[in-house]
Image (cartoon, rainbow, N blue to C red; front, side, top):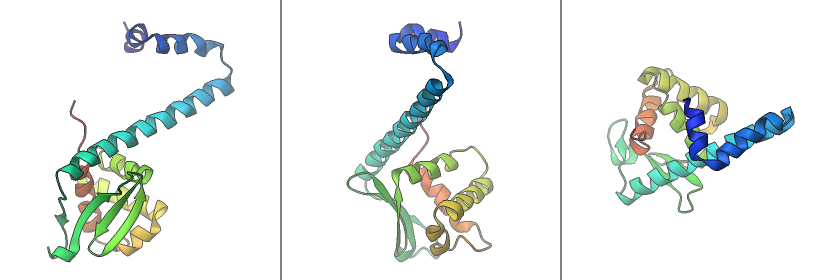
Length: 162
């Protein structure tokens, strides 16, 4: 029996939705798909917030970069309300929304090699957050900072255990 069918039999709401889908017009199906994507995205943000709460409870874990001095620490701090994060690199504090952080975490979990993840992080930041891209020196030839950010994202938001 296909997984979708097994899931529907266990969940009457899903069974009802699957029964209604063939009766909906394209606009209705497109609307439901968009709503499902938004809800899925919100679930991911909530999951990241829960991980961040656990990490915050364990105390800060800065990752040294550059020459290893205390002023060059790279870390992620979550705001008290949980709606934003701060990427801290030395004295530079860059605010990111939960959605932006979720996008960076998805890139860091892509399963690609370290070089490719660093390249994709740089590309995303260049496109979406030019201020961070420039202020953290990601526009230079070295991808060391992008690798450090990728490692920090992985350490701060570890993948779910299967």
